[in-house]
Length: 359
Ligand SMILES: *[C@@H]1O[C@H](CO)[C@@H](O)[C@H](O)[C@H]1NC(C)=O
Ligand SMILES: *[C@@H]1O[C@H](CO)[C@@H](O)[C@H](O)[C@H]1NC(C)=O
Ligand SMILES: *[C@@H]1O[C@H](CO)[C@@H](O)[C@H](O)[C@H]1NC(C)=O
Ligand SMILES: *[C@@H]1O[C@H](CO)[C@@H](O)[C@H](O)[C@H]1NC(C)=O
Image (cartoon, rainbow, N blue to C red):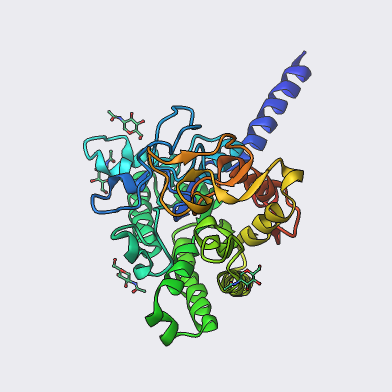
């Protein structure tokens, strides 16, 4: 009897312990691919997903600020971790009278903002966003407040098990293509090297404030998004894809070097480019029928006028890779998130999310 009670408590204890090995929280940084509503709080931003048909497949069926028909990668990663989606930072701090806010930082925070880049200036076209350097400033404030509240040691333990997601770079690549001035001042190689080295400084600031486990995405095949395909008779724009590949190479060597300098970092790199190319080249094996057009929009490939209430919408939102001219459907995001968790290594390396959780 005594033994079995002991055994059972041991079992419950171990089970609890295993559960505790899962991430206690997710901290999200990045652009519109993982923004879940921060931009709704920016008065000047024109990059906001607040009108139908955005959100048509979200549980509430309403626009939420997500640049998707439904859930985005930030939601789907949280879902797989068994956690609620981390709330937008600006929703937490905008409610100054809410005394539980500081504590709720412990359940994860999303700092991502549509239009944001690694560089401060990459959001110029959208008038306002929270560029990555500013997102990292906000995280530092969160860190300071939490340290005061629960103490440096508990906070250190909490953060070292939490997952830090970083999805950024696409807007910097768009920025280079849209600016003759940037092209004159930097070769493509110089530009992507500067993106990677600027990102490294920002990642180091997260690490200096307790982050240990990073899920970092490269940029997608920018030249294959509907907005770019319309510039090349519906084919992918090669220069944009070449620049994406160059940046992803620079990013991967930076990450390797960074880990050598900080041995206790764990990171998992998602090759968004390879993952998208695979969907584009083998659509039927994933259940997709249309890889070129946006589901919601207007004009050629539904990519010449944005997704608005008056826009046309495809009949099957599950068989399109792209929801609007720039962003994936929930269906495509689900495939990416499955790959992030379970591999294979041509998409996720040197380890996948399952392995990142276990270290
Ligand atoms: C305070 O913020 C938390 C976390 O966002 C939320 O769950 C709660 O409902 C808020 N309380 C009030 C009174 O607004
Ligand atoms: C939250 O943090 C702010 C800033 O550090 C502090 O003024 C406030 O007292 C904190 N609230 C709670 C409930 O600890
Ligand atoms: C970005 O802007 C912030 C102010 O928001 C400034 O402190 C920082 O130095 C800028 N970073 C770069 C690389 O220009
Ligand atoms: C347009 O698409 C074709 C076919 O994929 C490709 O060979 C060509 O390089 C593209 N042109 C530009 C300007 O990207």
